[in-house]
Length: 285
Image (tube, rainbow, N blue to C red; front, side, top):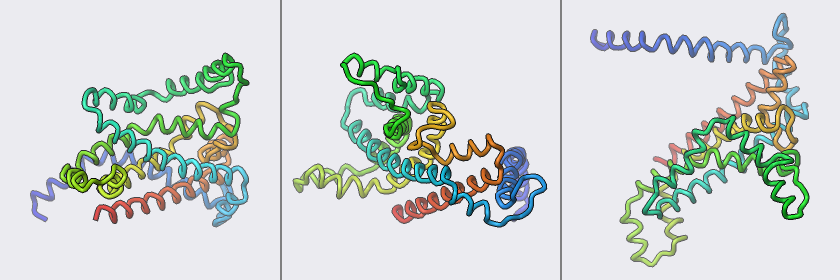
């Protein structure tokens, strides 16, 4: 390495050092300490118990409920997010006038503060909310939207409303990169719209699909904020997630169980993300 490159590297490192120190102090070191607590029976003066805390998680009914609900929510909401976002992107591609305004409508949820959004959904789905007011006006009985089996579809709806705009933009970009010659050749061959989608649009969009899937999976783990603000610490069991379990463990000061649950969640997300990234590299190759 030349003297000039060494100077450039040292200056760059000096500029990055404050950020690195802050990241280490507020993220790396606390995470390392929490991982240590996951192998102790108590945070202060505890003894090493190996993987006993992790084994105890899979005997805990609340944790298993949160794990199954989180997996179900991700498994339903992420594919739905892709399907709805792609459908919206393809519809917007057909709009000639006012496309930007229609796109803005679907992007607005990304910038609305969570507090305002939660107030809207509470007003809509609460026991005395707008939907039940409409049902009462029609002579129908009230529906307990947020404290019944319907709570899961409601949260999936909120997730789609909040996150479809971002993936829609990704798909619009991917659709714009498909050469028009492909579609002209398909039209010359009298291909149907479904054949065109299966043999041209979707194969050309595969890298974008994988990227959008990664974003949908990551965002689906963030739904806890909306669920918590709308329903509190103990929602209906169909929307009790892993984050609820960890939040309740923190409130009860059960740090070994909290940190072991956190470590397990980080491990699951890391494995899932690595699988999706490998899939993206394989598709893009």
